[in-house]
Amino acid sequence: MALSTSACTTSQGGGGGTVNGDTVRLSLLTDVANFDPIKGASAGDYVFNRMLFSSLVALDENGVIVPRLATSWDVSPTGVTLTLKKGLTCSDGSPLTAAQVAASLDRYRTQGTATGQVFGADNAGDKTTIIGDDSAGRVAIKLTNPWGELLTGLAHQSTSIVCASGLAAPDALGLGHVDGAGTGPYTLTKNERGTAYELALRPEFDAYPQYQSLPEGKPANTLQVGIVKNESSLANQLQTEQADFGAFTGPDAARFADGYSVVKSPYVRFFLKFNQRPGHPGADPAFRKAVAQAVEAQAFGKVFGGGATPMASYVEQGVACANKDTSLLIPHDLEAAKRHLAGKPIRVVGSNAVAQGAGNNYIAEALRVSGADVDLNNADNATLFGSVLTSGEWDVYIAPSITGSLLIGAQLFSGAQPPAGRNYGAVDNPEFTRGYGTAVRTVDQTAKCDAWAGAQKALLKAVDTVPLTTVDVHYVFRNGIEASVPQGNFDPATLRITG
Picture: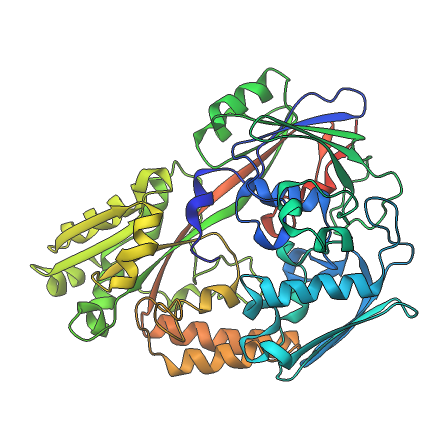
């Protein structure tokens, strides 16, 4: 998940169309690949998931958990009991029971792709139990070992609840062909893959996420979804009043000012990682420090057209518990970098999925200016993650992440090396691992942030990473359309016609 930058060449939820009565048209840059929440991977999958299905809770600003299908919860380090909103129904009008919710979560537990992030790796198999009590309207999740990230994991779209009809026909569910499977505000009424979709509002649905920024307005009775080729076409639709909403990662965002509401948010986070295996220069802390001295985050961000913000960790400062102390960063010092890097061969690798690898070219050139002999592999994602990183034949990796999560990113700096894990650079930082372990096993937010602070400080002190910048997405709304964007994540279920 942390490295799935195939989505970086698309917007999270491009969009738009004219407001025509109670109809809003959306246009996506990527088609939906799978309607099944536990199999969704693309930007298009995410948009449809949030419109057709609902999770139990949602993640608001500053990491605050707010209601979705659940109205309240009692959480501890070894589990959570959630009380469901009364009167919940599936998309065919049948009751959504606690037993069905438990069955859906149990399916995710056994078949999902990131279950360790939700339930904790130490709670695999029969170490997790999920029980639905229909009479009380409650769902209880019990863990054998402490895991303080459970409630946050239940806010992820992959844990969205699927009704019994969908669980009974998973193949048809993935194609969008199961009536009554949904738990979200819309049903799919037109399904022409690769061309056009239409969704109808469920008038009885009232389990919208309770974000602080939830717009007043009304949901559209009909959503019409089409596919566009690129962001320039999307921008043209907005400017000719044929579109209401668009999400841009490129320069077309600069075309919008008066008459539009623009929300800027991190989309990709970039940072450097080092191959610290014996025989590689990254095993030497002095080399890692010299690389940090050679590069400038501000200069790196400029290659993306100005839509970038420097970071002080491997996530941006707006993330709950993220490091904000810039004094922990290595300052730019070209002369010091030259003294250590002159004549040194360095194999640099990075993904070309974002701006054709412009950031990778900057890093390579900055190291060359420092006197290094640089070999740059500007690879496509399949090659990068399939063979380059796992082979170990690299020295510096320009890592992109599309998640603002300390938890998910931590897997890149601890634990197993490939193929069993994602510690590509064989980092061994016991202080970071201890802090990370403490943070994810507590539900007390103060204790959690204290532990994360120590972990990130250890990582930066050892120069196991060099924070660079975000590459931002700009969500552009035309007058009369609003939506919630908590922590920079556009939630299509909250689209409202306000004028």
